[in-house]
Length: 402
Image (tube, rainbow, N blue to C red; front, side, top):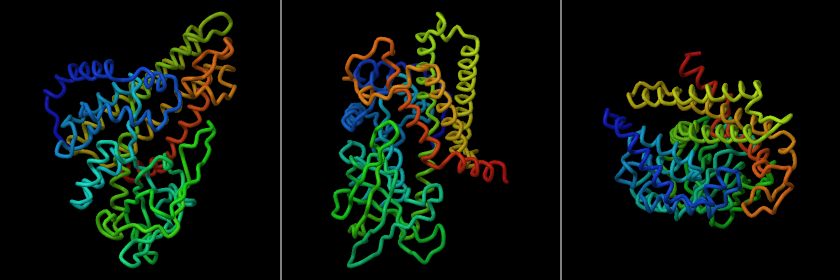
């Protein structure tokens, strides 16, 4: 982790101003509207914003400069993420840029680095993550998908589930069992799989909001070249833990929480009960004030733990602590959004997730349609990347020594 000097902090306001100017001039208004009003984003939306950032040279702030990164300090990356979220920019899809890319950089072969990293950076390859299986979610180490070496290739059989955006993916990074006799963490390997390989089939899982962003993926004698093994055979659990630490450290998303808190305030201003706005109701004023205080505490905790990590003083529990705090806070905000909307949030209208939705009943505010779907969908954040219960176990063991 790079060291941060005083000039990094003194230049931060001008850096934020530069980011805001870029967003004002380059973030498409339709994408901004989709994000701010909780509309559904399609693959083309994500790729369009990815390309804009790529052309600017800002698509991979967490990458080293030699691979196409920005060279920003940790505080600059934090400021960039926050400004993008508040402005309503789509999040870049994490599976390539922030998950498999660091693993390839740290453990991949020279050939893997030279081939995959430029394609991830440009957006040419869309990645998905093959970790969870039926019966192997939080207990990931119990995974059963097999990869056997036959005639100079891996032959893969089994199933992955809850695979986000598998229907769009060109590539999957996945954990497979390559030594069925090994116990627990041993015998697991990390493979890169071309999703166009014969024998792969995808079945969508429909979520409560009517979307199909997650999937089951089936492997039937899928042949994967030996060169697609990352690192050493049967050492995949080491790489999996490395990846999960990256996933969890970025899960706090302070900027997103600020954006959603601002949306809650908007609802409280526009929604009237008994002739007055909710924001003037003492109970609601207290609830919003508490969420804002919690936001300030989350932000300061995030900054404090970032400083510890930069100084090399972290104990390994920071990522889990931030994920737990960040997910709990944004879930509380979205639940208050639904409650503030009242009966306006009750009807489920699939067309509400589109910018092209037809005119609706004037009694129902235009922001109310997607609220329940957004709130329910966001509950997944307390599950992926390790459930809240798993994070508490890690914190108790690593930070508290229990």
